[in-house]
Length: 557
Image 1 (cartoon, rainbow, N blue to C red):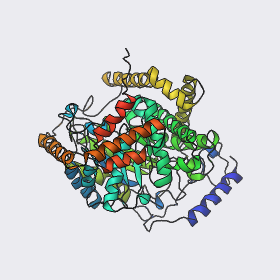
Image 2: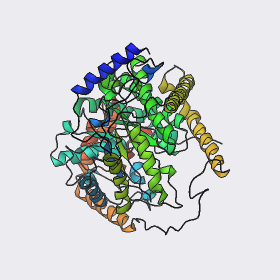
Image 3: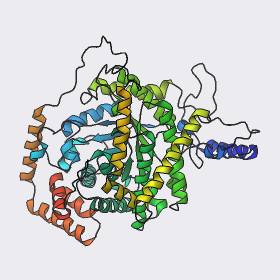
């Protein structure tokens, strides 16, 4: 790019920056020196390829979505939490909000993630252990008791039974007296990544996509601020993928959901802003920053060129980040505080819109109150003390970082081309479905995980406390343990709830939901009525399993 174009770009950025709202804060260094809100090439200097880097708030958004960076608004501190029953998790949420958390992120237990009730025989021993147990809308009421859902953004990390859980959240909001039109938050709903990595599905892919399409239509019409899909790369990376695989598989899934929306006749400029993303922040500092920058650039280009988006917000890739659970070690777990801080800093320098920082003990158990507070304070130290919020994309223009950004983008593009080849019509969706059926994604992730583990075992990749610097004076940690009494009490409450509800109303609502499934009508309204009647998660999912069947992954060797 020649000097005149660079100078013109800077002038455009300056006008947008001047017009934008900024926080009332001190944007100087610790020593009191003033810093500019963004840096770039001098106005009289040409910079080949600068159009791929650009200015914050301008296409291709490599340097961020907003001209102000974090001077306008910092990232949302959104700590992922859930354990035991709804009352216990509600107490943790109130602690997070009282200590500076900006939003909630719900972790569900394994029975809930699999669409089962707590008293299902297969739920035994798992109730409340990896998240909160939710069986019906009444549990949602308790979960958010005393928390104004109309004013609190709420993320829910669940995919297989995401839609039934979402309607229970809506019922809880109704019972608070909230205006559903004003609800804001994110539902994960990303079923593609379940078949690719996490394995928490209920049905064949097509019925899941049917439900997701219904949800997209419903939210577009009734709850416009709510984001019905958070496309998740986090679980793909935690399964062992490389950074490029995480990026490519995640964005490919996002393109698949764009194709789903278009197939429903939705306007890409209206529904695309409701798609958000969820990435892993791993321990390789610069590679992760490059991944986030490349993600924005790739998404903007493909939405514009392949899917016809024209509005700026439809081109924006907004993403939440969680530090890498798989990087935490059971050996010398206090070291995990350092790992989490480095990973969080990479997410921030990559321009994340919201962030969860893992607790030091999460490789051993659910976080204690103390370790959860340390994780929260990690973000607050970054935000309040380090100066990283003062300058947008401060590493932009680094020879190393720009080379990494270009490299990871090129690898992702090669993967997109291969996914399209897998399908029979050239679409991303057909390629994803074929890749799931053939085990292409899982095989590639398994190979990447195997190569990395070999490097660890050979000592080529070093992990402090595991295969390097193993001597320690650390004491054993006190960890949080979920009592079996949680399961007993949850099942007692569930039984009482069933006995007190109107069984005719429940059956009628479930029958209407199944009728909608058969007729092609949008399934959200009848499912919402079932939740109002206190139909349980297991009953809603069970009725749909009876109608659609269940999915079993083919055996592969």
